Length: 96
Image 1: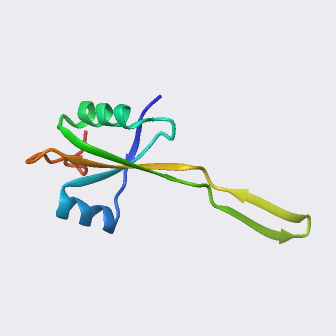
Image 2: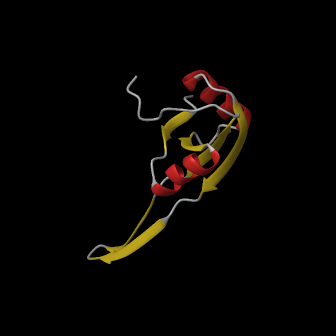
């Protein structure tokens, strides 16, 4: 099970990085905070101070067609906001 899926690149995530030194990642929905902390420390070689997680419910959409009502939904997402120790920095845009 890979814990970290990808970093979140958005205006709000970049603002939090500049303001508080917090980084956002999409993570596996079954991962807990301890697993997320270990994965970030191993992947980026930094010291993690705090981990906050958020679970987003799937979005359901429906539309009427010739064949009747078609219903679909997106996947459930889990996002982790990582606060690093003082003086630590992650370069998300670095090419590995």
